Amino acid sequence: MIKFLRPPGARPETDFASRCIRCGKCSQVCPYKSIKIAGLFDGVAIMGTPVVKAREVPCYLCMKCPPVCPSGALDRNLKQKADVRMGTARINKKECLAWQETLCRSCYQNCPLFDSAIRMDNELRPVVDEKKCVGCGICENVCPVDAAAITVEPGGARR
Amino acid sequence: MSRYSMYNYRKITQTLMLLLIVAIPVLNKKGIMAVTGSLYSMAFGPLLITDPLSGFQVIITTLALDSVLLLSLVIPVLLALLFGRVFCGWLCPQNTLSELFDFISEELKFKRLFHPQLSAKWRYGLLLLLLALTVGLRFPVANLISAPGTISVQVTKYVYEGTMGPEAGLVAVILVAEVFVVRRVWCNYICPVGGFLGIFRFKKTMKVVYREDAGHVCGRCLECVKACRLGLDPMAGKVYPLCHNCGDCISVCGEIKGNGKPLFFSMR
Image 1 (cartoon, rainbow over the protein chains, first blue to last red):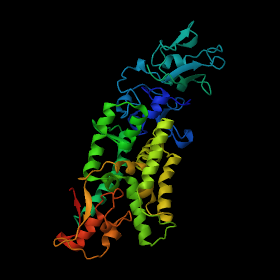
Image 2 (image 1 turned 135 degrees about the vertical axis):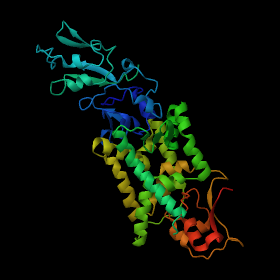
Image 3 (image 1 turned 60 degrees about the vertical axis):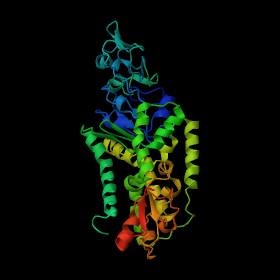
Image 4 (image 1 turned 120 degrees about the horizontal axis):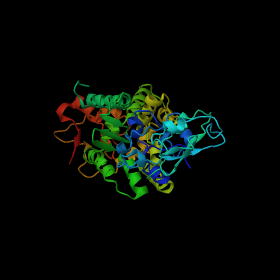
């Protein structure tokens, strides 16, 4: 299983790997430099493919990359942010400040699907709605805990 | 060489391609997206051009026909069918670098370790193996050793991420092997991209023809043999499918013989 996120619109991993020709176009059009090119040390099979490392730069869901894919590894028809499925955010309640009774709303406030993919339980603790979460990784990026207490598990990469 | 010979046009084209590979990511980074992509797949506005080998690998693994992908293969396939492997001879950045290093090592009279007989069969054998692996492993395996693709993607990676991956070392390995081990080993015996392009050939595809008759007089100066940066012998015929149609042999022949030259391009 791949340990990084794929760009929005990516087909399920096995299908993605056979369609992606490693041209790098999605990475070139990404205005936030979120999409990196995997190297040899990330694995021979994924070398040259696009990855998003959310803790470094998450995906801001500008939706510019899916239409440029020449081989359909990214679904070119994907337009709506809410339809993206790069993965699913998971909260480590033992590390999460809010769940450990310190006030923190970082992930909740920064989630692009505001008050939908992440909601506050009793106005205090964040809870992820797995059906709504698009897996963009913004929550993982803004989490103040060292080694983020909320991380996006890759996969389920399509509507 | 005269100022307007084909040789000079080719050098200009090769240089422009090197500049394009650098210009694309530099301009993209500034937000100018008129041209995007790499030598695996490039987009000039709405016009898409994809490396036929990359497209073929996707088709044989997914067994699906994506119309955008298929359309993007039309131009490179037509180019190869009409003019032969001019991509290799006129555009490929690896060929440009290899030619430069070949020129230097020939000038310095370097002796290579091995001198195997020129044959395209190694390249086709390797291509079949790579395609079998592609289907078996379900990802485009041949793209791991696509030199032009690697060069262009790694330049993008450098412009965007400030670093290159270790896979960029492929270019260095190729150049060292070509200078010290076997002359032009990559293009002549290994390259899967060129090998695949070589398949798109038929009777009327442009080719170098050597003809001696009343209108074409050969002085046996052997300058064409010396001019060939792939080490082929244009006078012996049978240079296909290795020949890149770069035209250097024809340029040098025209220099010496003028209109009566025995070497020329023919589409018949």
